[in-house]
Image (cartoon, rainbow, N blue to C red; front, side, top):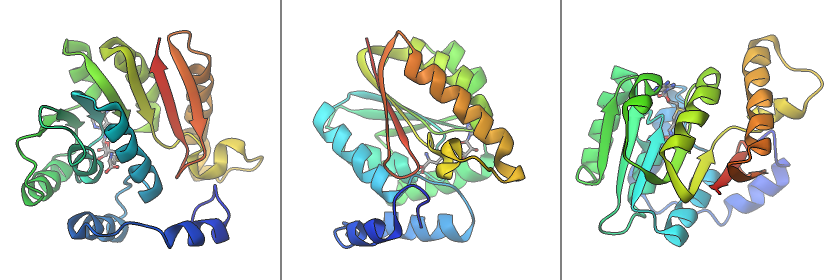
Length: 213
Ligand SMILES: C[S@@+](CC[C@H](N)C(=O)[O-])C[C@H]1O[C@@H](n2cnc3c(N)ncnc32)[C@H](O)[C@@H]1O
């Protein structure tokens, strides 16, 4: 259950959930069973809507994991749209490749293998939408690299900005103290950036939405 919304609200919204895609449902089960963090379903639906509305041509994702959000993004792209997605875990890359093959989306998803901290400074392609979903301690640097690669008017979509509710809590479990500090610092930077029009929405685990000015 969410630590952001009340349980009753989540239960109610779940009644309307579109679960027609068997493959992504299977991936959600696999991720939960193997403790692989993936985008919350409400955030994924919101991201899909955003893709449909904004019709991005070039999308960059930082943090592929098993390819769940990659598949959800790519399935909403228009014909000429494509997704580059960066992942450093070899094991996750293997799983993502297999799921992407099964989703028949190999032609629109390009996995860039390696650490985004090394890959992004060498990139010169510009993107209409960037989805940041990597290790929290990397967020600050990846934020600056994302700004460099984002087109004017482009959208930066960032997951986990409410961090299970801990960013707003007085007491944080020891195991989350460090990551909570990173997210709190990130949120200040994200909301005060003069390069973005930014907002944080209480969807899923907290979504940061920034439009490049
Ligand atoms: C939260 S998961 C991504 C979930 C995925 N976006 C989804 O919703 O289906 C984070 C992933 O980012 C990868 N990762 C974290 N930091 C990274 C970095 N600096 N470079 C590349 N991959 C990174 C991790 O290995 C992990 O697979």
